[in-house]
Every structure is written in C-alpha cells, then in structure tokens.
Length: 365
Image 1 (cartoon, helix red, strand yellow):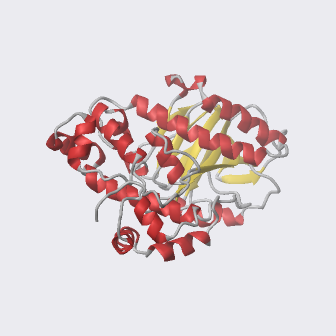
Image 2: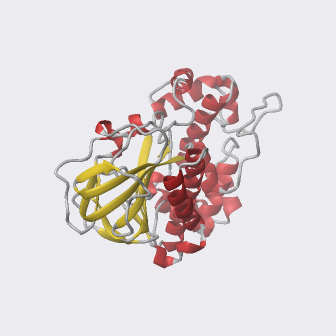
Image 3: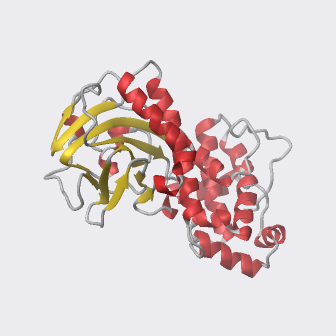
C-alpha cells in the first residue's frame, strides 16, 4: 500500500464540500452524531429512577445507531445522578449530566437511592408526540399533564445522543463514564441555556415541528458540552480531546483529517508540524494512544465507511480516495478493521436508517 492523493480521473463528492479543518466537527459528521429529547420528568421527593445500560434500549430508541448516550438537563430544583455503583454527584438547576459510555445509572432526589428495578420502557404508553411528560413519586411513575404539575420538586429534561462507533470513533473513548457540566461554571452564556428554554416550552406546548427542533438543539448542545469539557480539562490531561488543544498533536490531527488520502509519512507529517519524527511519534501516542500512522490508517477506514454509505462511488474509487492504489489492499484493510468486506458493509448500512427515527416509547430517565 502507498498513500496518494486524489487522482485526476477520480472525482468523489465527500460531504459535498471541502474537508473542514475543524477536527472535532469533522469527527462528529463522520460518526453521524444525532440527538433526541424524549422525556420531561417532574419528581416529587422522595423519588428515584434507574436506567439500564443504553445498549438495552438502543435498538428501540435509536435504530441504526452503533452507540447511544443518555443525558439529563436539570431545569428546576436539584437532584443527584450516578453511574450504578459509583459515587453520585449533585445536580442543580442548569446542570447537565451525560453518560458517554452508556452505563446503567440512577437519578434521584437524594444520594444513595436505588430503584428496585430499572424502568421497562416497553411497559409505558405510546404518546402521539415527544417529549413525554412524566411524574415521579418514589418509584411510581405516571404520564402527567404538564399544566397540572406544581412548582415544587425537580424537573429534568432527558434525552439521547446516538453515534457510530465503527470502524473508528476517537472521541467517545476519550470521555469519562460520567460527564457533569455545571451551570455555575458559566454555562448560561451558550446553547445549553437556549436548549433548556426550548425544551421546557416544547414539552408543555407540543407545537408542530417541536420534535425536529429539539433534535437539532440537542445535537448543538452536545457540541457545546464537548467544548465545555475540553475547556475544563486540567493541564497534563491526555486523550484525543486533550490532543486537539495541544500545539503539535492538534496540528497533526488537523492535517491528517484534512487530507486523509494524502501520502503521509511520519517524516512528512513531522516536518509540517515542526517536530522531529521521534518527538511527534511519542507525543501523538501519549495523547491519542496510537502512533500517527496507525491513527491515520484507522481514520481512513472511517472516511471510507462514510463514502461507502453516502456515495455511489465504486470500491476502487474509494480505495484511491483514502490512499490505497490497490482495491485488493484496501478491501483487506477494511475487512481487518470492521470484520466485513466493503461491499457487504455498504449493503448492511443501506438497510439501516440514515437518521435514526425516535420510537414512540418512554425510556427510563
């Protein structure tokens, strides 16, 4: 295999635009980030709700998504959130908690409470329009009239983010099991405050187009959460997100994402970044967990998976686009990364929803 840039006789429209130098945005587009808001929960003390691992709900909630993450935004009052078996964190109005790895978790009015069993979403009524308004007393949950709920207690907007994990998603592995972004840290100057206002309004009024609006706002909120998390990372933190803000690793990532099909070598990349090849190799691996050329090989497979799914280009053209002169070499590399040959991957993905449609269930918060 030898890397090369796009040949003159091959033309593939990738995302219908030039590749962005905003590496985080490029990754989020490639892994098909999408969001949905499902629940507006009102809890009256004492109350507790427990959610199973997201993989138990993903097929029903976001069909076609490899991975699903649950999030909760406290719009009034306070409560506690925790990965099951881990130490809980206090959540105040304006705080957001997310479970990036899809862990089973508990939301409750006091620390240490546990439900007798996770809520079964299949047992809940199917509403005509999302989000669903629920009222919790103890472990008892019922559909509620949003206009009838009093001002006492706590209200939480609950929803989901979905994304692809295969062939390669460098973002999710760099996130903690529980991500808590506090309003006290300055969140009320961004999209999250806007999201809260819209979510409360749409939950109560359920106007036409409300579901679509909340989906788009939810996705925007995810980006804002990543920014807030990145801004709050301490010096010396490693991981893919931390690598984005490193002067040298961030530049290397931007170059590889901007031109994944180019004939990169460790020498040419080091020259562009301004480090020796050994220093770049060590620094890049320290942040991302992979040497630069191994990372590039993984990212090429992710780009190829998008081209297989989103274009009609043949496999040979896609191989050239991502830096392979030989279709056979590309096919072997793709199967090694995914367990599936490129043509079979395309057929499998074509059978899945390109944008996961929310199902009319009421999942556990």
